[in-house]
Image 1 (tube, rainbow, N blue to C red):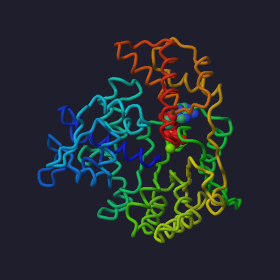
Image 2 (tube, protein in one colour):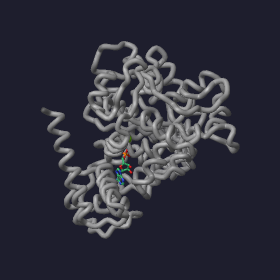
Image 3 (cartoon, rainbow, N blue to C red):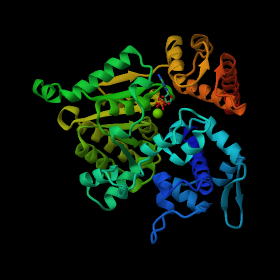
Length: 427
Ligand SMILES: Nc1ncnc2c1ncn2[C@@H]1O[C@H](COP(=O)(O)OP(=O)(O)O)[C@@H](O)[C@H]1O
Ligand SMILES: [Mg+2]
């Protein structure tokens, strides 16, 4: 299941980060992702001292509950020494390679410690960019950081801290994703442009009484660019984006969930004009059909009501939700949106253009059209992974120049691995 993979990724991210941080003395605590830095921060003297290690308790406090036996079974490059229950990468290279082969690109791109390591292998990764997008920019470094701006909006104290565990706020200048990096259908471009205009002309829309606007649902298979598009929108229209992961908000603080949802929407109104982006929207459906938890149901109802109560025209908040599983949503969830935007699997022409973009900065003598023909059914994310594999394989031979054969082999490899994975999944 996808959620499992996500946890395995967080777990491996943590162990890799610790290992690289311990080894590379040039890295400072400000390079650590906020969750990890906060956990290891010395409350008295400040700073994060080396070497870091990860006991079971550390891991659970940073990423949440973990079934260690299952994880260690799946991740053979991890080892636990029993007496101290310390977790270690007994094979760092294998761990790093496994991680790179998952859908981990966004994680790497926003974790400076990992980016420092992977930038040696992947031209699309940059330590400096990761540092810019890492929200850990400390207050002491001068300039108005995200934290300062939030404090102005929200005030200091526990509430502000709590809310930041549930949402991630990015200001447009922190966003690396640009609409230009995405190959979109004409329909997608139009709808995105309309949403932008609606924000720009919201007074006019109010005067004309057209309120039913500004709630968009992105649907489509994983890896088709939904998350990237939402972020890119923020940069394009120069609006801050408040990202909410429903699994986070609902599972972590169950008792407080309804209150937290309200807080997130209050924060959005304070940030206005802004975008609120609810990823994993299908979580709503899963919890509505299972009747195990009254608290979850109440939370979902609170969320749907909050969505009803927010308006682009009146509050200046554009609401975007995204789901990989639209078939799970019921009418009550669908009807909240005034626009459904479909992210389809790219056709051959789109695949060609995506490959051209991804290969843009790679020194490669290839025929993108032929590769596009070989990759029927691949998502944009798959194509990225294929190119990255090809780049890494060439680097194994210290080559920075790729030819068609490198990419064809990477496609075959991807195909083989995917079908192995499917076999393992069903049998
Ligand atoms: N149409 C596309 N054009 C260019 N890149 C794409 C496209 N679709 C996906 N990608 C790339 O694949 C990766 C994953 O996309 P993402 O936005 O996370 O997908 P989703 O949210 O739909 O699962 C991103 O790096 C993105 O740039
Ligand atoms: Mg996504």
